[in-house]
Length: 383
Image (tube, rainbow, N blue to C red; front, side, top):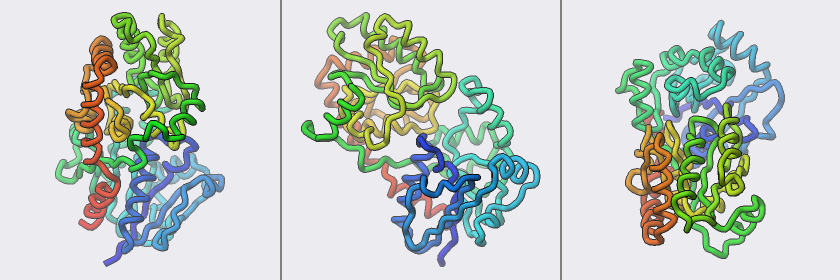
């Protein structure tokens, strides 16, 4: 029997997509491609008409519903204090399933309510977030939001453990569903025109270590810069290798830029800013090694994208990253900059090790696809 599935797509309104927005878009596209039986109602709210900014969902079983209430009024005045209108009322349909791909203010409807939780870093490491962001998380009242859900989907076993420990939600009602990786991420031929185009666009060096992600403390970028300083001091043979940090600014990023400015090798450290999704594949392919020494990740898209692109990976052994990288990369202590630097140097100095990790990463990445993720979601929707 066909179901009506309501999806909150408010995370897709941002001009620059973060990991959560990319997750939601890729998974939703895979669900719609896979599922021709059920009816999808996609809801967003904005005081301005932002439909032109949204991706196109043109399948016959998809309907877009927009409301134009002031966000503060809807979130705080209605959802938080009145617990209405229910989301099905806003969508204008009786729902069988209501899916929130991320935390948000909501009045749960009478339906099977499912919430996807990417991570609980804001509860574990509030010091990594701005005052404004911590205030928003407190107002959101995650414990209440979780209690309103019938089922939770965690994107890693590590996230599931955190959910149980921090919210007390029943473990048997939490499904672990790993994210996918787009087929766009793949090794490119050396003469692929996009490689030269991206290299020229960002004025990239011939040899570089790459980080890609938000510029914020949780990503341990001060530690990465210290690791680069160590590598350059210890290995004169790597003098031509630069450090490239790609990604938009998050919060509390000033210390990161200050660390780069104070480095003896500051002229060889380059910040690219936000990188368009279309440029990422070439960027990964151009890098000699991808380093992701984050303190905490709910899943960790960039290492997976790098592996799928055939780029050797160094990643932190913290939180969920071992679940993603496994033995296909080198896992390091994020609190030990020398450890990060040594692992990176060994890959740069050994063609054999670099090729071995490249092949291992390609094999590992084949375990993750959006089609597989979508099929698991559909099974959960049916239960």
